Length: 401
Image (cartoon, rainbow, N blue to C red; front, side, top):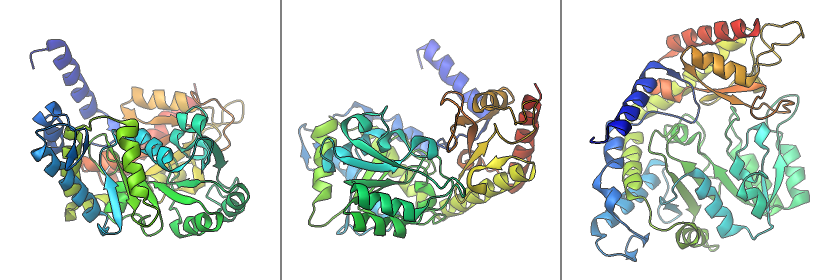
């Protein structure tokens, strides 16, 4: 690279990534093949429209790339092309969700999504997101006692509110989701069931987590978390008389985007092929095993985990009300203090609100941990036991300050 300033910064980031323990639940490490696709000459090509229906010439190669990504996506998740459609053009997860709502929910309509502080995402209708400004969120949450989803409560709420769409799949909910129950709720209330499987897509692909596809009408996902691909997204839509797929395609282009990023789409295709390999299935299973070990070890050391543990790759830890009591009778480690202390010792996490949190979002009561990135680096159960030991020591030291 001829730009020394940018090269120096890239080299610095490479060095930073190599020396830390990365427990960010929404991050992972891509293969060299994915990086090669992202940095390819496909960056140079404009391709407004869809394969076979472009507004620019010179797309005979790029059409093949997009169709390859589509076919690999359907094959990976065991979907029949006659029954499911996939759009691989969304630039990221947030615009993918926005496209679904724009296609299927009238302005002012109702999106029933999990509250942000209970584990939902901004784009599930939260008021600070455009999804909460154009549409009305009907928030649901977890049971205050069990800290897991109470499907009977959601059913009652959905029947009373009659939302246009129910959004499932979360950003900080560690337990298995009962897709069949949510299907029943959506059918009973006349709503579409949309699953945002961004966090668990790789686990679903690797058969380490139940698939939502037998139950959902629409499935959105990013491709860069447990799926271990580029920072991009996909939208799957069930094919039937409602023509959901046609409406969604029009919402993506020309509704929200212009030309797709073909380098991203090629990188998606590479990642999907990798995820179809036997080694990826072993990887997904190891991700869950590692997360469970981390959860068990932290619990054994006195830290309270939301819902008591995990069934996936992520863990939500209450650092404020548990741990080593200070003179106020609580753990005294806020999410920000915990995150900063861990980063100073080379462990990267994110501060995170916990359900019914009384603290502000920028300094909440917890942290979120994930096992996917370090599992990619080859870490096993014994390594995560050591990581738990380090986390415990760092947080207890912070609590005494």
